[in-house]
Length: 251
Length: 253
Image 1 (spheres, helix red, strand yellow):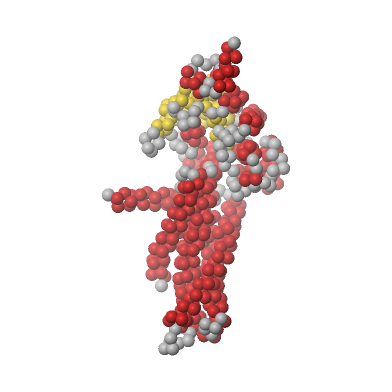
Image 2 (tube, one colour):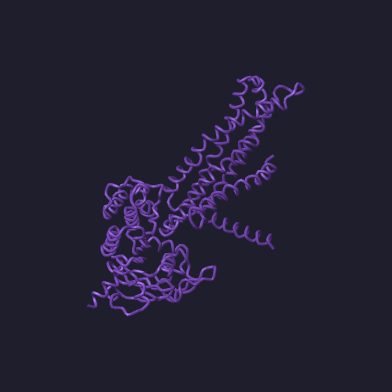
């Protein structure tokens, strides 16, 4: 009985999500206003996330390099193993999936709380009464803005991770030459594209799911906080599920 | 003219908030909806602007039923509406000037210079010259309400809705807001519908009044008729205030 109730609730929520997306993906009423919002969202959601992406990727790149060198590398393995493994982890998983999980926390909570606060303070009602399609006006620039910026964040993350690995090399953990050979060994450019494609899909999940939770807030500040948490949890779960399918599909 | 015919609103939990409301809001006047908290005033207003759909009944805008309109027709009609919310509902990421310019940016074909000129004119009309570059969080509650009025009139609406615009304001500022709404109504010949339980507003600007009692029409009339009304439900609402009870007694004497 509980399971049926849960499934029905999920179907109802999914229907509501699709309905919201239907309203979101409509032609903007004023292209000038849409472009203004789009640029603003690219800056707020993308550019403002560059710092955290660079910082986390740098340290993760460094730590992966140290861990591989200390725990996996052995005299029986070629010297490029550490660099090669670091590259594969950064390119294939960290810079797309894990970085998007991190962004689900930062960007997702930001989107859900911003739209949720607009809902409880009647700003969305004000838009509707003016005759503005509030879903399209508020959500579309966020979804497209994040989807536009995420490939750049992926590239920055990969490069920053490599720089982190080089930092350990210069600290004496591994020689820079061995690391360079490893990073270049059997490089498949498609893996970078795969990472970018996955991240674009994850960006859609983060922005749309977080907007859904924010848009449907009822109540007050407590409910905005709850919506923000639900947005992060749901986006993260969906990213993990989508990662399995996309990895299988694109590999 | 806005006519309401046999309007009912029942929510999903089965609670019926509005029961058989019949009323005509008069053109070019300040129409007030009064009643106790929880009587259904806000629900009625949300039905009028389409934020809620009525369970039954008709809302006629110049004879056209708002309930039966297509989405596109509703959007077009809404562009003739301006609304002032209880919380002002200003866009907090925009400056005061940007807030007033917003409806112009969205729906007018004016060039930027004209849009700025019009927005500044509206701000000037509500006595807010000089506050253009301030953020909503930097100005007082009364000023926020005035910005909301300026935003609501930017596109010269035919209908102006005000949901408890005096809520949270001191009596003096409330009076300023009331007078501003009333004078703008007359100046632009708008049909204004205002929700309130503030008796000072009722006695000050109530040209045509609908009293809602437990979701039904309790009484209708003008501010002059209120004092002489023998309607018990209305009297128990109005003269709950000691001040107005004394005014009524003084009038009798």
